[in-house]
Image 1 (cartoon, one colour):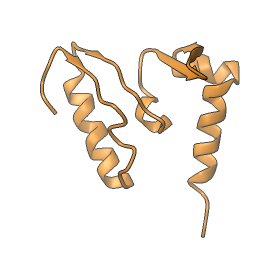
Image 2 (image 1 turned 90 degrees about the horizontal axis):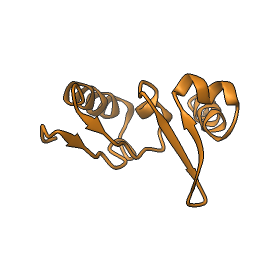
Image 3 (image 1 turned 180 degrees about the horizontal axis):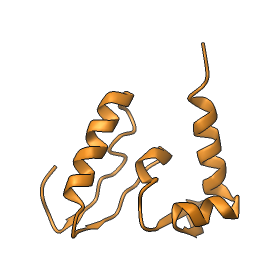
Length: 92
């Protein structure tokens, strides 16, 4: 990743295994200090430490807030977190 004042990772971890996802997230964490970062992600783990989340649904803003605020609202973000948490325990 380039060290730029604005960073726009688009689904940076979507197709990665857990080990590589962690490595990418650590790289992003190092690069984001004193920068503006707009992350597009479906993996909730990717956005769990962000300052603000904007949840889009059907092309419109459904929710905004910190991860903690959105979990308290028990809306779309909380449902996504719950589904992804449950899927981690799936056994095939």
